[in-house]
Image 1 (spheres, one colour):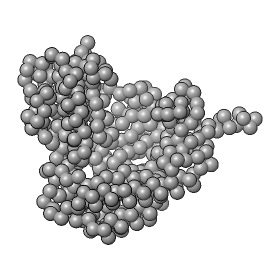
Image 2 (cartoon, one colour):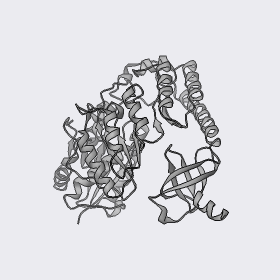
Image 3 (tube, one colour):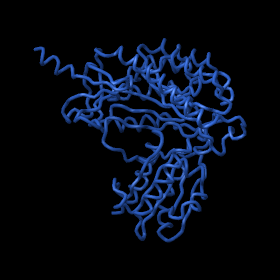
Image 4 (cartoon, helix red, strand yellow):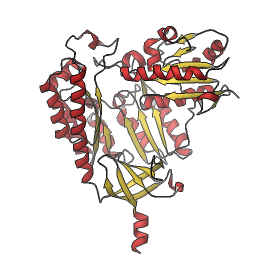
Length: 437
């Protein structure tokens, strides 16, 4: 049987798309391999959000091309493939095919053509495409990603996503519920709903509040997460659905991008600093014990030192549990290309270092306050070190625990015994009770 190797970069949406591609190819008899040297087809599923991600992919293509044997196929798929299109075929002669996020159905055909010596690209947007008839090939796990929305209609000046994933469209609620029901029947107990602005979901009849309630009440579904939402799409209906659906976890990843209203306006974000803080307050009123994480860009065009200090003060004021922080990366095709007052690279680097220091200090302070508290955790798998198990709370805190491999995929009660500032050490409460008894 032919084998396929897929290497995935970027966000959870790309992970979900790789599972779709495996589903498409499984129908043609392909089996997955984790060894590129043994693969008949090698695919790199790419991210285009930052230049650094694209440079990593280009470097990786140089490594993978060495594994090609006569008749093998090397392809670039996903967002970078969409952005560069046929130019990638010119830039990397060893690449045989280039396919964007709406073109995965054409994989078998383009692979066949590549084997015949024809290099080709499929980067057409298909507004109807949700791959409803393609069963994703997922690893056996208690957790799964479910894409509910593709594309984006918001035109943030820094963002390439509308150019790489096309216009926003949502799957029918019934189709999402059917997929989650199948997952629950196979043993999945935690689902993360995916969309570029996931809480703007609307299938023409049902909104995101309807979706949360419907998915959250699927029998066997114990935890429900979603990412990434847009701050001002948290309507009263959505807040009520979150509060009234027990499966919805007490964690929201809420991208702010900047703490400066002036910078947010230049980014074409649909809120200012004050409105963002109102959303934070509304979320915390609705969900007791809510953990908040965020995305922050430093060094966007025109950002002054005063603007940057507003970002630092916002991190302190909100008290984020964590933040993904990035230096602004100019992307060809985005409106920000037309801005002239770009920040010097060394200034971006220095500001990023300062931001990370503040984020870590705030997160460590919040985490220290949790030492000694008890939580339900899902045991996700082996930790990377120490022979421990990695677990996760409903608030998305990672805790390392001693335990049996048989625990993987199950829920346990643990007590936090310490923290490194970002992750926790923990002790199973069941063992604690046994020792006391």
